[in-house]
Image (cartoon, rainbow over all chains, first blue to last red):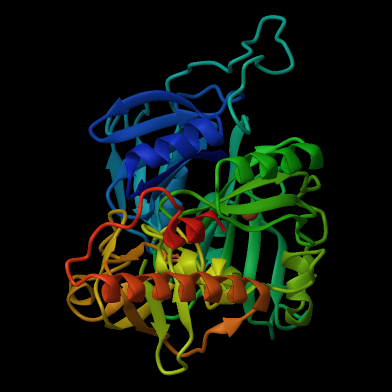
Length: 309
Length: 143
Ligand code: FES
Ligand SMILES: [Fe+2]
């Protein structure tokens, strides 16, 4: 069983015209389809049909799509999810444009996940035959690809168990109240299925208001210089910056958190060290959580734990 | 030129036409708990105890419920006052983080108030101001 990556993030936006300007002109995603009030995008270095879906009306997360390596993986994950107590539905090819058959279930944290193996291949913007290093006429930040997301859950330990059981994810870093896992309360966990430092992170949210909530979804960048340049473009386009450019102590990534025109939090993220299943888990204690999240300021702004959609 | 008054502490902040309450307060050197500044996270809600406002963008139903549209709830990052308003913060007090900006705003407000008063006194019919000179209101917006 192998989840390869977060294939798509599907979010709601209050105003489609402004959202399109943000995701296409500021972030530089490529629009691949407009259909039934939804707009589909991919980054220049992504080959599948889309990685971001915008839907007009409201704000926050609709669902995530996870692409698996083999079609049998879908059956394995279906069994795992059922064993973990989730109700699994089959979804058929075309329910999501250009996405194949798969399954759909809700996590204990109230997030809708879809798992699929096939997506229409469009190809990266540089192609596969003697490719150039990057497309010459990138727009705005020119993000190459979707990277990861952070979601809220009331029970982080339970979600970590669920993602381990269903997706074979493993944690790379964690914030916990005690270094001894048995005594600890888990406050946040960073998880992956491969060498990417995190594909999905889970943060403890307030009881009664965490179900299905999105903290942010992130786009990949190359390095500090690109993160800094993104910040300059956000200033030019009046994008509200939440924090950054700064570094996360956790994952060592370089980052800016910012908001889209509907208030969904986005991130541009560079770096992060390679993850391995046998690498000892990194643990952060709550007294150092501020440094873990914002390595330079070493202070947690009031928005990190209270602002989400 | 709406004025936002904070209840019960009494701070008064002058807003430019079309400006949201949140943007105006921050521009005037004040701070309170805000998040996305784009109408998505619901954290910037206050109670509008007097005056009316409109939202400058559609606001999602899970951010402002139907009930909240009918009571005094005001999502400050999207709310543009239609005239003077009085707001009450929820569970916190307004913080003055930049007295210099507050001073600039206070001066702009005083000029606007003086101009409005002089116009009212000069003519009950409210004749238009002399075209030749820059009006105080215009000077205000240039600062
Ligand atoms: S600051 Fe997020 S809704 Fe106003
Ligand atoms: Fe992130």
